[in-house]
Each structure stands twice: as structure tokens, then as C-alpha cells.
Image (cartoon, rainbow, N blue to C red; front, side, top):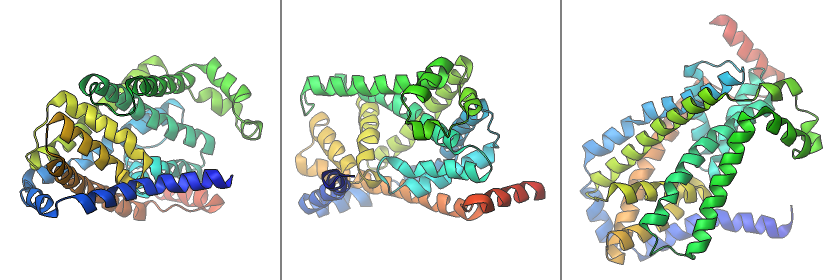
Length: 329
């Protein structure tokens, strides 16, 4: 990796924390404290508790993908491993730690390539739906979008096209085989089991079911976040709210835990859409981010506790441990 690329990646990791420090430095802390002390604890508590069905829906979707690829896993294990993946990936850009789920499958004797593919496809469903919802921001925020309207339209179109191609590769066997033979590097494609690649497809009915579960999971996510806005007495129209959360979810992958980048988007939307003074918008955005942090801590705690029950070990030892565990149950 070149020095310029390393420096670029390092700068990207620092972007979010730098933005957060800037907002904290320029925010009226008295206004921030005033907003936080008025938080409705009941609404915040409901949002935290709803993490359980949220994880279940995420685990169910991943199980549906694995089941279609003839990789057996129970809904309990899928949900638990999803929680561990969120825990391990919570502080990495793009939630790259989710890929650890593939290593859990490998220690259960499954194909690492299939496991990684399942993780990528699982994320594609979220990105696809979030991308479509974020695209509505072109309507709600058309007159105030930074960076030029043409650039924003092109970015949304390219993102949705990439997601559509990824789902088509998963669904169409011939296209998938062509990608493996022509696009995937030879060193990797030579290690892929042709039979495993052939099994990695999704029937239209399974795609539809996975899409429905994705919509249900994201609907629950939007509801939980809307409760945070209500807990801070920040009313926002549903349409712009959905676009805002989708945009925040996408840009949040640029920094660990969405720190800083999430705040920048919320400050921009609150000040432009709700006509808040800049000082009030910054204080309210930081307050909402603080409640986001509460949800993140809940994910971390649950994921950590589950990881104690699902330790990740390496090599044949891990596979043997899993087989022994299966026999004892």
C-alpha cells in the first residue's frame, strides 16, 4: 500500500473525531445541558429495549441468506453472532468488524468465502434500502444540498446501481459464475469451491422475503431513532426525518461509530429544515448524538456478553470445539 493511500485512510479516520471536537468546541454547552436534562427517560428506555427485536430481525435476515446457500444455522445462533459482529465492528469504519461472522462460520466447518459473501450481501440489503430512502433527500433538501445538485444525483444513482448489481450477482447463477471467472482475482477464485459458488444463489421468493425482513428491521430502527428525537422534544416531519436518518446511516460509515459525520449532517438539516439558529442546531444535534451513544452502548454491552458465550478461536481447534459443542447439546 502506498504512503499516500495510508495517509489518506488515516486522515479519513480522523475526520469524524475532528468534526466532533469542532462541534464540541463551538457549541454552547449550557444549551446542550439544557436539552439533555429535559430528555424523556421513558421514550429513551423504550428505544433501548427495542434493541432485542432489532437484533432478532437482523439475525433472521442473515439466517435466510445462509439457509438459501445450504449453510445451517439456528435463529438463536444467527442473532447471537450478529450481536457479536456489531460489538466487534462498532468502532471500525463501515462496520467492517461484521466480517468476523464469517470466521465464526469457518470455525463451524463452513466455507470462509461463502461466509464473507453472506456478510457482504447482508449489508447490501441495508445499503440498498437506505440508499433509496436517502435519495428522497434530493426532494426534501434539493434547494439546500451542498456539493452541487448534479454531484448528489450522480452519487445516489451510482450507489443504487452498485447495490442492484450486487443483488443480481447473488440471484443469477450465470452472472455469478462469470464474476468468479473474470472479475475475482485468480489467486482467490482458484480457492473457491465451484459447488459452493453454485449454491450461492437466491430464488426470487427468498429475495422478496429477505427484502421484507430488511424493511421490517429498518422500520424498527427508524422508530427507535424517532423516539430519541421525541425524547428531546425535537419534532420533525416524517419525510425529511426518514431521509435524514438514511443519509446519516450512509455517511456515518466514514468514521468510527458515525462520530462527527453524523453530527455534521444533523446540524445542517436541523438548521436548514427546521430553521433553527446555528447555536441551537449544534446543541440539539450533539444532544441527539449523545442519545445515539446510549443505543451504541447497549449494542456493545449485549454483544460483549454474547461474545463470552461464543468465543472466537482459530483453525482446527475452533472447528473441533464447535463440533464437540454440537454433540453435547
